[in-house]
Length: 409
Image (cartoon, rainbow, N blue to C red):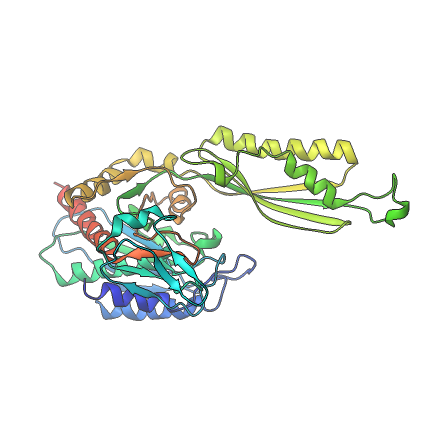
């Protein structure tokens, strides 16, 4: 475990921010910087069949140390960080024996990580926290997962008395922009099932996620001198406002939780002659998800009937709820649950209010529940991860490998 912290600190200092507007894979050239380092490290710790393809997908094997057939299982994490907040020049801070009080991330800019606002902090009193300096995200999502997987593989390799089957690991680019699994070679990976190490607090074990789609609404207007505009001007900005007011006001991220779905408008730009709205649609329930897409079409039709044919709509599905593919193999969830309980970790089985590579991988033939990696407040300057949570994640990985092997008669 002594290498876990320095390993993680080294990873987060490499900028791997992905770019949703890029057409390449990986979406940013800088993701190669960490990918190449990871390949070297996998060789150094004794992994076999280490490979990296032309799209920066990394795979490696820890061979079985048993003389009987055991299911090949896998662990997956992503090395890109979110485009929502800067990942450049990350300066992690280490808070040892956290006292439960405010943490000044940046004195000059008066940026404070406070338990008065982030209540989860209170549960980590006495532990070692890794935080940002208030100017960047940290990158625990998902470099914590990578550090945990590599540390677990190193531990298993150094402790052959722990019996396990063949273990496959994979690290992917571009998960944060929804493309992490797009070029993942499931057949090459060759596992019967896998786990993404990409959750948050200790104990999280998730096999449900949102059904997801994105929508782009384009409004075309007509610009006329405002002094002579009556019955002539079509103001695209005004129609944009009408569109937004017809969305359910309570069905937004800030007013929903659990399995409640939402619409999330995340980008608007416009002038009189053209305006655009970009939003995402999320719902765990398939029927409700379809109804949300139909509502957008209904709003479009209503506005076109009112103003003329000025509004167009494009909806693209992004990923589906992986429960459909994982539930028929529920024993893979039970193994992870048993692993946690054996380590005195209380499993928190709940739906993901987001997406994961595991969703797409499950529909590609690799059932893939999600397990905690330990971090909090992802995608922003208040991101942090307790070292003790990362250590527990390493132990869960090791225990899953051991349990999978021991349950085969």
